[in-house]
Image 1 (tube, rainbow, N blue to C red):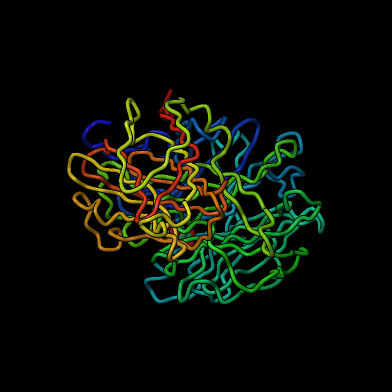
Image 2: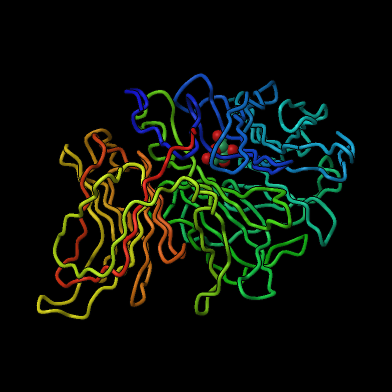
Length: 494
Ligand code: FRU
């Protein structure tokens, strides 16, 4: 990367220049995954929102396309979704050439500044040429505002069982469901709200989808809902509910939400529409930043990246049903096997000979097995240390006493000293006899997937210099490294 490209991820999606936030309108059509995103093309901070646009054949290599939606007299173009209207229920296209329809929020800044309450409305735009050009619907907005300050981020799905379109949207402390036959005329169905795992934050960017429980014939309905502030480590984060949806209202299995990701930098994520049945995966991407400091991070020509695309699955975990997230299998094409080791017993701090491994663009896989009490006592913590020539240190691992995963970025502090960024980030997780860690590092981000995605933590990092030293550590007692496998990751530009 050139000087003003310092921190540019090599295999994550970033805008070519300027400000990006939420992923929007993700839809698959005729061999292409579309990714739209909240975009302000005139600055590296948030401003009048557009929908930026990119397409990919494999979710790994992206082609940037021109801006799809510009703000207009009805407002900024806030977050929303897109669907393929196969049956041409809108009449915007034909059954032979079904329209791609974007359902988004208009945020009318002037009305907001004038003190109105109804400045957020839902609207449509459509494309008949695979998303290359867009027309806004002439009778926008299609869903007027019922005097609610927060009324945004529509996610629309076709609900097979009731043969209608369902919209879930965020309204402050709850989500709302609406139904429609043609995407134009909407009727209110119900509200869903619960005490969340977080206090006081506003709900944003919801998603609603069915997911089969692995190893069963049971299908559950999932609500993803982002919340800001109130994340487990401060600021913005995403939670989910598991339950049932009948085309009208949602019933959760249990009243409390779970965190989709315990890190500080995975927000506003939702899943792709119209993935072909023969594929059948539930594919997710999130915005890899946090509203606490997103507009201040030390990148120069652009701001923010997306997470790696992830596959979400539903699994039974003792008495619980949980979502597991893992990098999509397409990511494997970028991996270059580097090094493998087995069966080392470790205590204290042990430097690893990384040879040609680039610690700033790699995947590290470990199976750790903490040992029974040794003469030093019980193992209290174990994990990894990453260092650079600036004497910065990133520490991550598992604490046996508090039963928490942690990532401490307080000593990765020279380039970015925002107090909310300088944090010890933790998340609750109970390990078994062994624990698997997959750690994916890309210039300014670390994604950790534990035990095949049962626990996930995504954080940004801004080291002054690239990391070039790796150590493993075990405090007090010892830990056995059952497996260690490292990969360099190629960039996705080739
Ligand atoms: C979430 C969000 C959305 C809104 C968008 C505006 O990050 O606040 O609720 O639509 O960003 O850019």
